[in-house]
Image 1: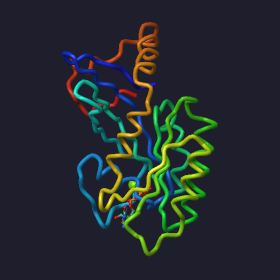
Image 2 (image 1 turned 135 degrees about the vertical axis):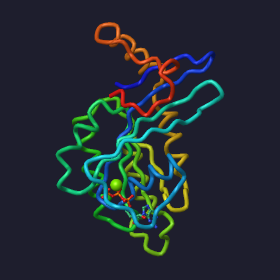
Image 3 (image 1 turned 120 degrees about the vertical axis):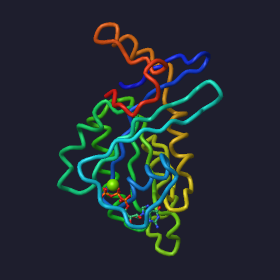
Image 4 (image 1 turned 90 degrees about the vertical axis):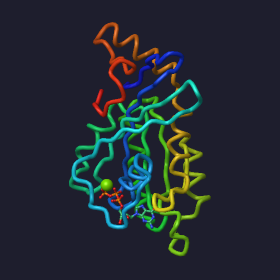
Length: 210
Ligand code: GTP
Ligand code: MG
């Protein structure tokens, strides 16, 4: 698991690997762009392979969570790459488009795959994106929410375009991650395997520690 605390005076910085999955064009890259740079593009190029970005969330004055984000490509031809990105992920956001029922089916199949193949403690959030497209809605909030509740998933309807619930989504994930527990297990592993990176000394780089 890629999470560890590093003291910064009295502050703790925890680092987690997060993966985004979902059908092409549901808005995965747009959600990341909104979260990381607070921007939105009406015309985005489809992702090739995957993109890597980082962003931090402050939970309180002394606790910061740094997400290492893998934004995967939703096109079918890249499907076989996904396990490389969700393997060892601490958390996943599975995205569908509230105007496209087939995209929810695809999201459900990713969730099944994560539950079968990813880390058993992975925190999974389901995100119904494009909530701004009110007149084109084809999936009700309640149907998606009850599916998410049954599966123990976090659930948010989001809009990368208006920024609705984007910060809330990432913050809820950060809050649900068992910070101390994961950090402790990371420390145990690093004793026998390798030294972890001291984030306080390394600075807030964009380097991938996965
Ligand atoms: P792949 O990289 O192919 O997997 O697609 P993706 O899931 O990363 O989708 P992307 O972020 O590239 O967005 C696809 C299109 O949807 C773009 O034209 C975006 O501008 C648009 N889009 C993304 N999010 C929203 C949203 O919240 N509302 C609206 N109206 N459009 C959105
Ligand atoms: Mg993309």
